[in-house]
Length: 173
Image 1 (cartoon, rainbow, N blue to C red):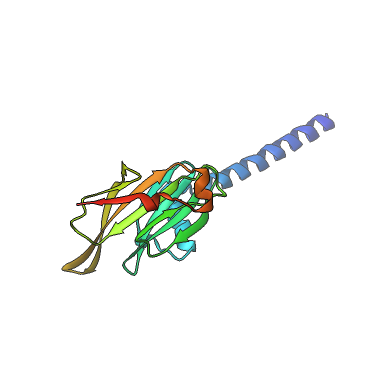
Image 2: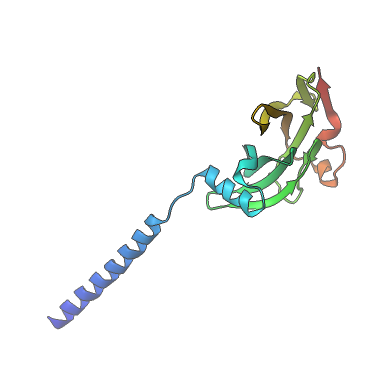
């Protein structure tokens, strides 16, 4: 009988410990994708208010920010477990962004223009996605920034940074 009580006591203790651990795990807040992105960006000196847009492509998140009235892009690697910082580019006007070390990373071409007459941009003959954001400078004055983005599948020749999509950009009025 003593052995039976001892076994039952051990089982109750084990179940009790397991439940406490599960309760602790459940009380930790689950962050939304946007909150996770903001957290990673903030760790790399991009406060949440600088984020103007983000795009998800394959396993990567491209976060567009505005600091000191210039367009920047950060590239994050995304998995179900975490979001990891890869790199950033500052003061973008026209460039293709890639890293040949990541096999499934698409090539992002970004074109920013101050020319209000530009209505469309094509990259390698394909239309780019047009985006715009405004930044309030004073109560009655805001700066509007137009930019276009285009994703291209990684090709072997891009690994040597030759003949990148940015060399095939057409601005259309």
